[in-house]
Image 1 (spheres, rainbow, N blue to C red):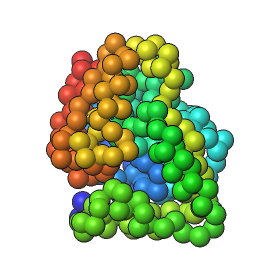
Image 2 (cartoon, one colour; image 1 turned 60 degrees about the vertical axis):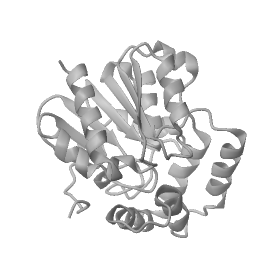
Image 3 (tube, rainbow, N blue to C red; image 1 turned 120 degrees about the vertical axis):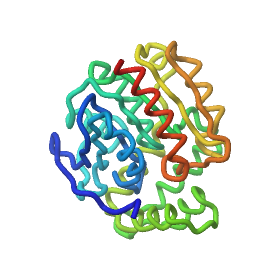
Image 4 (cartoon, rainbow, N blue to C red; image 1 turned 30 degrees about the vertical axis):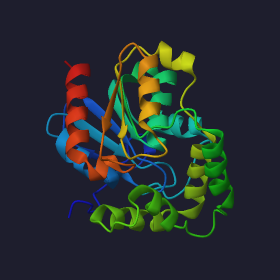
Length: 259
């Protein structure tokens, strides 16, 4: 099965799926998920690259949250778990971490791909995501139906079922900590994005209401090596639901940064 659980290693003390050999590609998932959300990317990229797909602190193989309870804390935990240079790829909150890595740890990042990334939420969207974070008590399991409906609508698919299982299995304290960091975080400041010197890909779905195509285009326009790619019929869980398009874009970017 595509979403079968894989063995973990613990580079730098942080649980990760490791596969392949060659130049390093780091994969960072979003809130409430786990490294297996990248299974299709792991299979495609590990043919020619060494892949480390990390579990966020408080997720997957990292049952206990650690590090500062803000976006920078998650970034620093991952930065301490691998040695660059790496192509860093993130999805959703993982995209925010990937960009923060490129900005604050540039020596370890030779390229960055931000999938379904947030940039300058509207006031309405910011209030909504912070209200959802505030309702979490860190003790009760997260309500999976809200995220699943936002990500998949009512369509029942293997991808939806896998995400449902991961959300319900995530440690409630780890989920609250990560979701709060996500809700109160944003993309790096414009000046930091303009200062990026590595190639940067911003990719999202045309049906994505939160990490919108406009956000990806706006971030890409700030960076000299920036590019935006929109998968017209995709939504938030694009790496799982539209793996062929995502894999093709990542392999192209990897070929560019590691040539």
